[in-house]
Image (cartoon, helix red, strand yellow):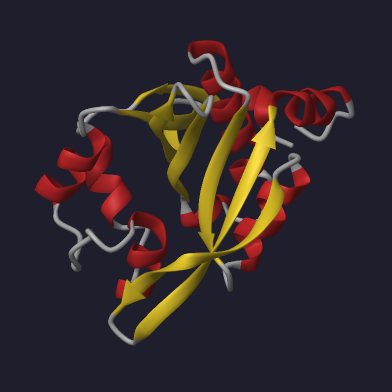
Length: 177
C-alpha cells in the first residue's frame, strides 16, 4: 500500500474546491456525504462539512497534492467507539491502494487521539470497492443496518463495519497497510 508516501493533516477550507470535482453525479455525492448533501456540491457546503463541530477533517496528501479526504466523528466514550466518515479518494488515485492507506492512517489517528476500542463506519451495500478496501485493512462487516440511506431514486441499504485496534495492528504487522 501507499501508506509511507501519504500524510494526513487537518483539512482546511482550501480542500473544498478540489473535493467538489471528485463527485460527478448526485449518487456518488450521496454515497460519500449522506443525505444532508445538496447537489451540485457547493463550496460553502463543503467548507461547513470540513469545519463541522465535533468532527475532525483530514486531507490525505502525497507530494503536497490532495489525494484523499476523510473524517472522524461521533466519538462515543461510553461505547468506546468513533466513526470514520466521508471517506473519499481522488479519481486518479482510485484502485491504487490510496484509500486503504488513508483509512489505515485515519484509524491510527483515531486510536492515538481517543480512548476507543474500535472505529466504525457505514458503507452503502453495493459500494463493493469501498467494502473490499475496508476489509483488506481488517474491518469486519457487522451486517445490514435497519436504517437506509435515503436517495432520489429510493433507499440504499447500509452495512456497518468495524475495526479493532488489534485488527489494525495485525494488518500493519502483516504489511497490509
